[in-house]
Amino acid sequence: EDKVVQSPLSLVVHEGDTVTLNCSYEVTNFRSLLWYKQEKKAPTFLFMLTSSGIEKKSGRLSSILDKKELFSILNITATQTGDSAIYLCASLRTGGGADGLTFGKGTHLIIQP
Amino acid sequence: DSGVTQTPKHLITATGQRVTLRCSPRSGDLSVYWYQQSLDQGLQFLIQYYNGEERAKGNILERFSAQQFPDLHSELNLSSLELGDSALYFCASSVQGDGLPEQYFGPGTRLTVT
Image (cartoon, rainbow over all chains, first blue to last red):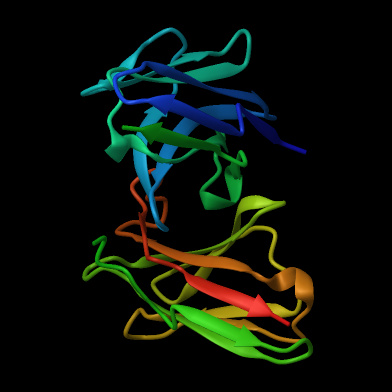
């Protein structure tokens, strides 16, 4: 059974801090690792990582995948209160559509002013 | 606003009952996905429909069923409800059959079973 574990489960930091969120996975026929941001209710897509060692960046957010050690990290620099959300990572199996997705339970990030 | 709509927003019902959740995808999207999110299980894929046909199946219980209608809206039917079915149910849509990762999520329906 595919497994995705995120840590920490919850994190409270001050505005301006840099945070690192972790995601490890054990997946048969791994294809990609996805990150989502869930504010209030609906998740929105952030990144998809398929190749090891290549950083994806979007503004203050960046993510990288290590396929040898089976983990990914999501970094957020100069955090703002608007970054407060639950961050989900999900693994995707080769050949799989949505039935190949396994989500972690998320990291609840709270940015205090 | 993703363009995906879900009704109702909240639903409170008793064990043993049956409910129907409704989803309207973004204009032009042919695929609809249903997910369940609970505190202990996290976000889990239930089922996907593409242009009216079932495309993929995940951890969907036999008490649950879904369909996609000719106008592409979808309904998720949950029957013989149990306390453990209490969760947030999301619908997502995408243009293609394998639209990952570009799925657009709706705001969800919070189901409480008492």
